[in-house]
Length: 378
Image (cartoon, rainbow, N blue to C red; front, side, top):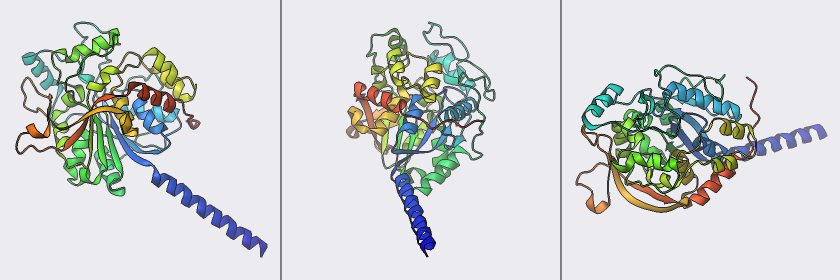
């Protein structure tokens, strides 16, 4: 009799524990990170490290580097931090319409682009402080500085994964898009209800009127890209048609993090040291492979999603993209409501203009120094 009573008590305790774990998981903010990951990046790691966030998956797209290389980076990063439970899902290898050949043709008419991501096949004519891009074919994966992965990506396609998860958790899933929006556009095209079923989209892309805000040489170098072309930003320019499709969709909420607020940020040696002082496997990896001097573009998008109070200045604007193959191809277009053209197909976006940089850096330091699970042996 006593044994049966104890058995019932144990079963009851296990049941309550299961309910508690389920409730805890259900209470977390759900996100799909869609990115052109070029290495172990704080932008993704901040979301993964946040205790109240459930990363449903990382969908991969080409952009700064090619998709297959990005997949390898994502898999290896998750291995090192003991989070291979998060699936990595291959997305689009190429833009919807844009090509390297078309970009070369555009440059012959309108001048050289400062940055072309995976298509950057020559050195910058005016030099660079940062290392030169490693140009290679789309299906080649070079040796990664953090090591090659042992795990494999999902067999699913990114757009299908996005659609499936959004319908599994209607109204709960944020799409955090920090690369070109090819995968997002494909999901919208496959499922017209996709955007409306998601909770929101928060993305890094576009530019309005960025200016150099910091005195460093690195800040001066990155500002040169926008001196003469203030509306031309890489994520939009890699796949303008995809960005246009994404911003025409009926999202419930859109947060745009353009280049503009990033000019007040920089991954300095001091900040990198503070972010990695814990000595965890995550910290060791990030410190080993991270190049300093870059603005914190994608990290800002993650941060304002995690804590919208970091936004110190924003506007409500209609945003679109110039897709005519002229001098403005890929340029950001924006209007306040009173000046929007009649019949414009676009949703109002919260456009982040400025952020609390001190609070943002404090968040990065805290999240990046949290403990990580032990990495499993391959």
